[in-house]
Length: 111
Length: 115
Image (tube, rainbow over all chains, first blue to last red):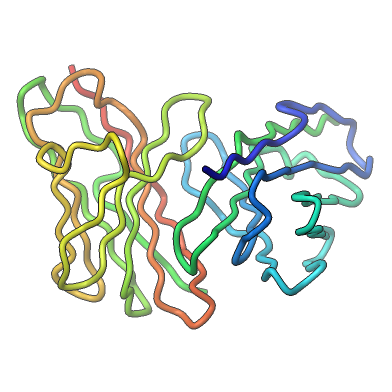
């Protein structure tokens, strides 16, 4: 059974700092990996999707890497802003559909 | 981008009543829709997967007679929580997939409170 773990569970950084969120998964036979953002009481916003054949994806200040063999992914956020404060979830899929979510990292970016 | 809506955004109901939640894909045809449940400060747990025109596939531990799912069209799926109890209070999120990449697009969620 696939298990997805995210470290740290919570993180507080001052504005402007670069930061890294970690995601690990136990079964490396994945189809793709996605990073999502969730604001309190809201749904999910997809940030980046990495296919199993890819090593990384970039969007603006976000960069996600994937090392499938070691079962790890990182989300790098450059020059963090207070608006980045949210919970970040990673999710992996073994098939072309079913997602298994991680436990999430609650990020607080302070002024 | 692909937009998925949910209705209602929140609902309060009395114990023993049934509640229906709608999930719509607004600008694409969703061949597959997913229903998730999220308890406070926990991650999303998949409840069931539904393909248009077929019966839903439920995850282990999810009662199919309690959580009725209908996916009658390529743009609409409904989740009905029957005989709701306080322990069913949760945040229910749907997602829809229909593209080549099988990427899931998520709705804004429905907060259900059973009193």
